[in-house]
Image (cartoon, helix red, strand yellow):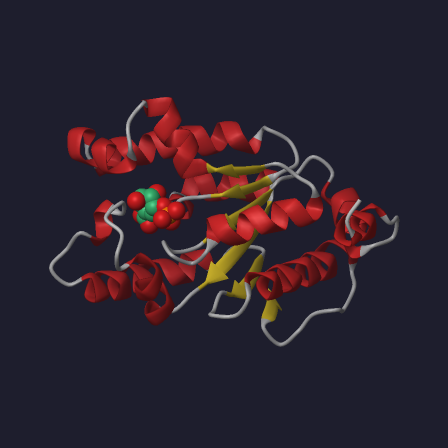
Amino acid sequence: MSETTSQIATAGSPEADILAALGARPIVLVGMMGAGKSTIGRRLAARLRLPFTDADTEIETAAGMTIPEIFEVHGEQHFRDGEARVIARLLDGGPGVLATGGGSFMREETRRRIGDKAVSIWLKADTEIIMKRVKRRTDRPLLQTEDPVATVNRLLAEREPVYAKADLTIASRDVPHDRIVDEVIAALHARLCGSDAVTSQVSGVQ
Ligand code: S3P
């Protein structure tokens, strides 16, 4: 057993407290493309020894197509409807860490479901970080525009007030991933278990 694993197994550790407080609720990561939802989500799940699920991957599996193909063949509205259905199903899957696609939290119905059934965390990233992470990739149809920076800025202006409705906000930035995971654990512990072990990068919303 690794040191980390033995720490997690220790009753009374922050991780054990969080698991007990979560009960059947999943942790849902929301935020923009490139905010690190999948990367951080995977590491967070490993720390808590919970299964990790990526909603985009589940949508692709359900459709038998990639996301760019779904957008191209059926259009964005069709993708959004499928996305809402897939996330609704995943929210009933019990404890776990779920990374959601950047547009999914914009749908009121999905937000309500997440609010009812999960604990949500907004990974908040600025344009510079987002562009650094997405610029060489072609798998985000919404960013295949003449001016991707302007597109990201427009999406951020539309979406940030909505992402801010998540239960917790963590600043996603260029620091080691484990540091962000530590902050997520501290914020979850503070929120769910009433500890005040929060740092300046962490803020509870609501
Ligand atoms: C989208 C984000 C993508 C994917 C789709 C649309 C968005 O997911 O769902 O390309 O509207 O922001 P990621 O946030 O995982 O990149």
